[in-house]
Figure 1 (cartoon, one colour):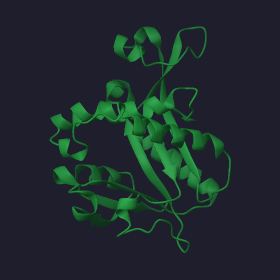
Figure 2 (tube, helix red, strand yellow):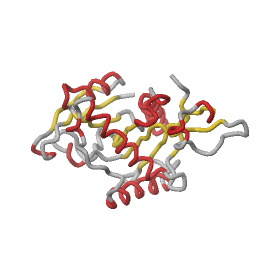
Figure 3 (cartoon, one colour):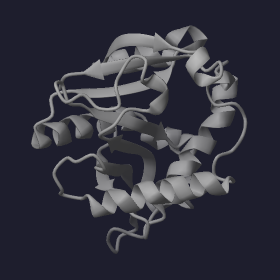
Figure 4 (tube, helix red, strand yellow):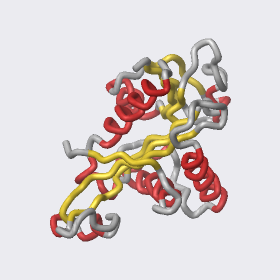
Amino acid sequence: MPAFHIRPGSVAAGDTKRLLDNFDSQLPWLATKGSEGQWGSTRRGDREEKQEEYRAKVERSEIYADQPLSQDWIRTYIAEVEALAEDLDPEIRKLASTEVDGRGLVRVPVAGMVLETKSADYVRSILPERDEKDPFVYLHYLLSDRRTSSIGKGAGAALIAHAKAELRKLGVERMCCDCWRGNDRRLVRYYEGQGFKAIGDFGPEETDNWLGTVLEMRP
């Protein structure tokens, strides 16, 4: 497994587009796995409302860097892999950042994560927006860039480990998330393998036939 460098999201670094590109890179791959029902076939990066939504997330994340938890707290993160530019496939090399040093070493963004202090609105039948008695941070987004799959394996696990460390710093003992439960619950099993425990299923009524599972972890 490669060594991952995890940095905060940044508008200046182009991470608004990067988070949406991660979504769109998944669509062809999901179709090959029988999971096209997870997100359909519509690209998010081409939709103006999604561009505005994710720009706002990254901007707010920069505002709340190093701030204590609050109702509006949000953090975005990008996982990168260091590699020599000459060793990379040309298509992956196009995604790399500027050189880290003068020897051709670059960092390639391979995945992203978004954490917030409120649950997604479509899981409220299982999990409240916030829980004052048992506070949680919600993992709203965890996605890799499928274009970098040859060098980014394990990025999701690295980002979850980073989230756990951040929760410990914040004094929060619970992390929740949701995921698609179609295709024989393959994605649910992935999160369970990362230490989450399923606490309830939702859909199709709440989510226009999208079937999901809510999970929690106590790092």
